[in-house]
Structures are given as structure tokens and as C-alpha cells.
Image 1 (spheres, rainbow, N blue to C red):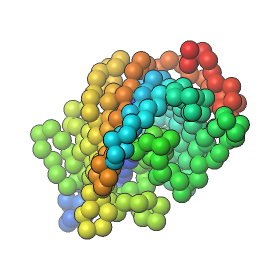
Image 2 (image 1 turned 30 degrees about the horizontal axis):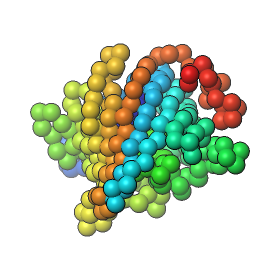
Image 3 (image 1 turned 60 degrees about the vertical axis):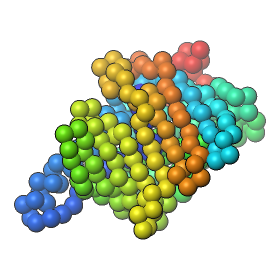
Length: 272
């Protein structure tokens, strides 16, 4: 699935497009290479198959060592290749979040903000998640809303800062820093699978405050898939582990599954 491979940040991944600069010939070469790396990484992380489904479990551990758990099912459908997507997240445990639903309409066009909604059954209320809240905590975890749905690739400029036999390391700088809490980030990409396996976020003065890791990768139906990931708050010591099970691709999810109606009437066929 896509998220499901999450190493995410989750945002995991938030990978992206434009590269940068040296002399004229070198700049052209690097631009082509970085563009290809980013697109392949985005595809590997978020676009395996035409759709996907997975059961997920989060273990949230705060700075004092206190633990919380979240259990849910993620459904994802691609509208276009490496482009617009639909996503639904249906929570089942614990009881205080049961029947909560997170809905996403993801847009590849940078001129359009992704649409995100959260259905809260206790209030029978659908809350729209504003663009300004996309980098806030997802249901009390160290993952952000944007980590779960993915960061649009055209939101950052990238340059290749390191390469060895196994990995590419890119530096990503947001085009609009007013929309995010970080100054830049580095992403390490596995050359074989093109999955992002490590993302470090930095504020000014090279202050590394947040980390997203792919802890375990498995082959699922021929797609390298992140089945365990971790997001760490390096300032407080708190972190969240996410595990994916029962991952399936190309299951034939219909558009109706991702409609507003499914917020209050979940598609039981895919959840039971």
C-alpha cells in the first residue's frame, strides 16, 4: 500500500523534484539525475500497484515512557500514475477512537491544497483539516497528517549531497518555508528498491529535531514495502512505531469507497 510503506513522514517521504546547481554542464546532469531519483522514490513509497489495503497498528511512547495504541485499516487508490490519490483510514481500536475516519483527496498540482477530513463519531462531526494543520499530530502520535498522506513532490527543491554503492542522500528545501516547521531535511534512498529509508528534519543552525525511519522492508506481491516504520521526536525522546499487516495491492477498490458517505457508512466489505 502506500502508506503502508511508510517510512514516511512519513512524511515519510516527502520527496521531490527540482535540483540544484554547479556549473552549466554539471547542473544539467545533476538535474536529470535528481529528478529521476525523486520520481522513482516517490513511486516506490506511495504508488505501488493501482490501489492497496493494509491493517496498521501504532504504538505511541511519550517522553515519560507512557504508551498508547492505535489500530486502523488504510485503503488507497491512485487516480493517476504518480499523481492524484484517494485515501481512507478507518480506526478500530482503542474504544476512544473507534469509528474515527480520516479521508484524503491528494492533489499533485501544487496550486491545489490536499483535501483532508476527520470524522469524529462521538460528535457526529466531520472536521476539515486545514492546510496549516497538515504538519500537526495525527491522532496523538508522532506522525503528522502529512506523513500519512504523503508530501507533494513539487513542494521542495532537491540536490544530491552524497552517493555511495547502496544509497543516494538528497537535501530537500521547502519552496515556502512559512508552511512548514523545518528549514530543510535529508532523505536517504536505497538504490535497489528506491525506498526512502531515513529522513532527518532540521531547523536553523543544523538542529536535527525529527527523524523518520524505515525499520523493516518486505517484498509484497513484487513490491518492496515498508512494513515497520518509526518517527522520533529527538528533542523529547518520544516516538511512534507503526506496523503494517495483511498488505494487499491491486484489489480493485471502487471510487465509492472514498466518498464522503464512507465517513459515516464504512465499506464493510473491505474492513471485516
